[in-house]
Image: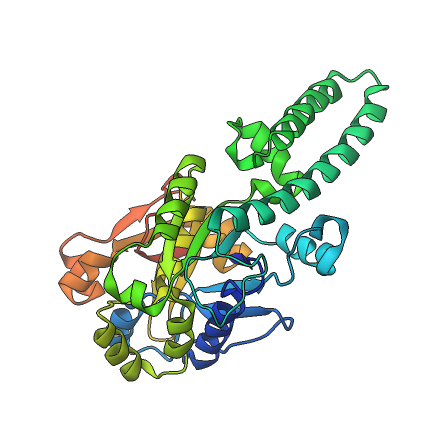
Length: 364
C-alpha cells in the first residue's frame, strides 16, 4: 500500500511525515528504510500478531507494511512545472491513495502561504492542479485515439466518447473519482493513471487543545461538509502530537496517550482508515518459524491470496486450511481448534476474510 501525502506549505504535512518516518525508525518488527529522501515505510499496527506470537513463540514476527510518499512542493502552478511540480505530480501517479493534509488551526507563529486559514480554499488549490494535469493527459490521449480512429475500429470511437466525458467532468472542476463508472471504464481509467481518480482521505490537522477537547472547530466542520459531498472521509489528527509520540518507546507512548485521553495514535488511525479507503484486509500465517500478516484486496480468493506468499503457491494450489483468528484465540491452540472442528478446508472459490489464520496446501 503506497500513500501519497499532499498539502500546501505550512499546513503540517512535513511535521506529519517526520512523525511517520520516526515511527518507522522506532519499529522493532520492521526495519525502517528510506527508498528515496521523501519515502518511508512503517509497519501496519496489528495487535493480532502480538497475540499469535505469544501462542507460537516464533523466530520472527513480520507485520505488513505501508509506504508513505511525501509529495512536497505542490503549489499553484504545479501542473505547469511551478515548485518542481512535474516531479511531484509524477510521484502522485505512483501512489494508491492520497492523504490530503488540511490546516484547521490558528497559529500566529506559522504563516499560511495564502495569509489566512481556509481549508476549502487550500483543497481547491491542490485539486485544480491535479485537474489541470489530468486534462493535459486526457487531451494527449484523445489526440492519439483520433488517429487510431482512422483504422475504422469501433472500439476507438467508444474510447473517444468516454475520454470526452472525462474531459467534461474535469472542466466542471470535478475529480474523475466522482464519476459513476462501469467496471470496464474503471479499468481504462486505471491505465490512464489519472491523479483525480485516486481515492482521497482528508487529514484535518488541528491544535493539541482541539484534539484533546474532543470538540470540532469551525474549520473541521467546514471540511467534513465538503468531504461528505464528494464521498470522502475526514480524519482528525494533530501532527505536532504525532511527532512527539513518534520519539517515545512503547511504554512511554501508551502513558502519553493515556494522559491525553487517547486510545491510539493518529498514525495508527490513519493507517486503518487508509486500509478501509482502499478496500484492503489482512490474512495471517502462523508457525514456529514466523507469524506474519499479508495484505490483500477484499474479495480476493484463496489461490490469489496464496500467490501473495509465492507464485508457486497459487500455481499449485490444492486447498487452504483456515481457522478464524477469534476462534483460535478463544481455543488457545490450533490443535484444540482442530479437535472442535473449527479448522476448515477451503477450495479455489473461497473468498478470504480479514483475520483468517491460514495454511496453504500446494503441489508444484
